Image 1 (cartoon, rainbow, N blue to C red):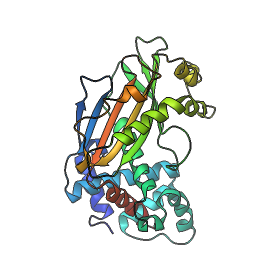
Image 2: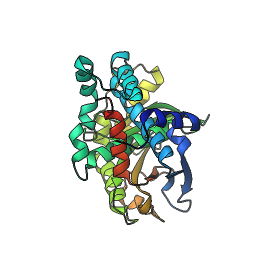
Image 3: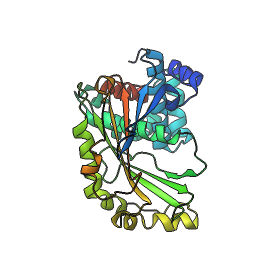
Image 4: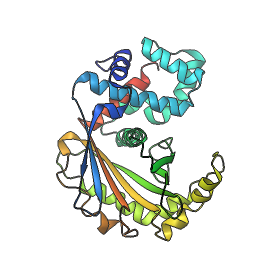
Length: 296
């Protein structure tokens, strides 16, 4: 079990602001490159701050997976913070939401890449969601990660309402990768992300459905043609690659070859990179799982 209890982790998370963004340092990189990128590093390696970040992610994931319902999310959260186990039908019900990613046996599997990849997607999502607002470029749509890390389609999509553009909107399709090697050579993972976007981006966008979303008329018109905009290489379309890795593997140079692997879009700002560094990424992912599984 994690050294810091869920209740202690929540207390620390609340004290620093309650967001993963409050526990990291952000550094713009690649100013002289076609693809600029940002390095996000955990502020502190202290057990309390690490636990706070792990709790925030675990809590956000369970809130999203359960729809925040009192019987599922509420009972899971109460039991977790009280250090008790759910029983009977409550146990069966909550486990149904946690099991697809956080199945107990996963903790025993060496190199469980699915778990680390899923936590990496949530790091991207929470860090993107909690960026300072830009009045000229506000986030219109930001979907949370898919229900399971191996689900088909793109990994992330952000739609912006943006002034001074032909559509009045823009969007960026993201691909998330992880690199768990010790050496600072995540180039292969980054290259794979760009290659996937270049070859499968239109397919990913074509898989999206907006029929169940309550959208403004102009937003619906825009998102209905995302695949068209991508294929036509319009300036409203862009791609991004995020890689989560160990702090021992932070690259000194990254995304400088992005334009060689993402060849379909060449307008300024078409590409964006993100590197999220955490001490022992695999271990951190298992700590998130421990918090999710505390009540089960």
